[in-house]
Amino acid sequence: MMTNNIEVPAPGEIIRDELEARGWTQRDLAYVLGVPEQAVNLIAAGKRGISADMAKALADAFGVPAEFFMNLQRAYDLSRAEQPDPGVARKARLQSCYPVREMIKRGWLADSSADALETQMARFFGVPTIDDVPHLAYAAKKTHYDKFPPSQLAWLFRVKQIAGRLIVPKYSEKSLREALPVLRTLMTDPTDVRRVPRILNDCGIRFVLVERLPGAKIDGVCFWLDRNSPVVGMSLRFDRIDNFWFVLGHELEHVLRRHGVTDEMVDAEIEGEEANDKDLPEDEKIANAAATNFCIPKAKMDSWIARKNPFFSEVDLLGFARTQNVHPGIVAGQLRNRLKKYQLFAKHLVKIRQSIVMSAVVDGWGQVYPVN
Image (tube, rainbow, N blue to C red; front, side, top):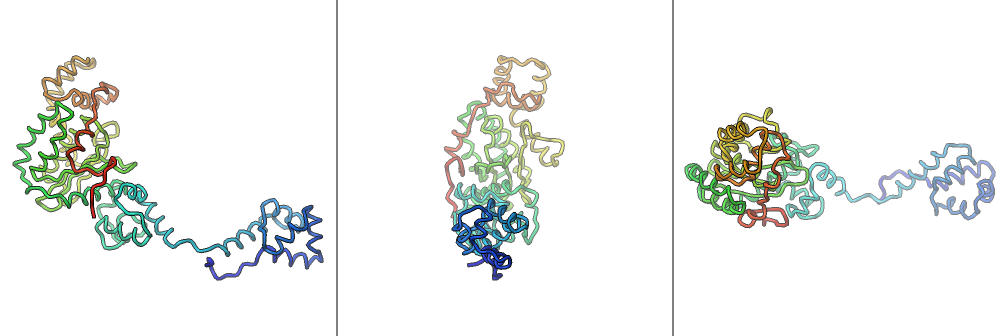
């Protein structure tokens, strides 16, 4: 199939017309160019294209710019080229906005035709058609989702997909408040994080771990499937004991205050070198303060820092961790964030992901949660 119905003459036809106008033969042109006669014959017959070297030689022979012959050859080649698969542009539209290839790799989408892929994307985002998917170039509707980067939004909707299929008891705020002290007793041993999913499940909270997509600086989310069904999603972007407990405390405070009932509370870069508390909405500041106290009461941390600053020894760290009944890595994490000295006590920031994925609802790190 041709790209259009416009007939573009072969470069050989133009050359033959020029030879006729000059009264030259193809053998004459070959002599002028200093090439074998067969080379000219093949071009004149349309069996060989005009190379860049030949375009320059023909330009000198006929007294025209070399670009004339190059453009002539390019136009002819394009006129003869077959139409690409119409799905190429449609797939490019999706990939230019969302990490479609990575979503396929992760098992969120099936590799398929453009039609099927667009249908899957619309279903993934819970909208009627592909034009309703946020961020796509000519999406018909604007929503609050437009404020989230596409990679974060895809992660959020994967959490939604999975959470919607979980069955948990009815949510109880009373049970969650009673569970907080129990959760805090798990902060001494990194392997005890494996008990967190069951405790939250018993409170009626859908707890989901989804590995972040490349480039998505997302830590967690709190939203509600309905007014009685809270969801907490975490990415474990930093596989560290301090970050896990801080992000968890942050999201649970959102749940207790019923944040996210209307619009999802998507939390990105809430701790560490990239965090910026000054520009945070009030709800996020409240959740950060609660998370800090959840890990170590702020007053006690303030007092310890005031007594030891600027010199913090290993003995000091371990001793204070014992008095607070937490792992030293949690103290180290709080200290690093408070002082903005992220090189301190790095060896205590132990990993926890391997322990918690054994008991949690997980999508990522080599696992695909089954969602039809």
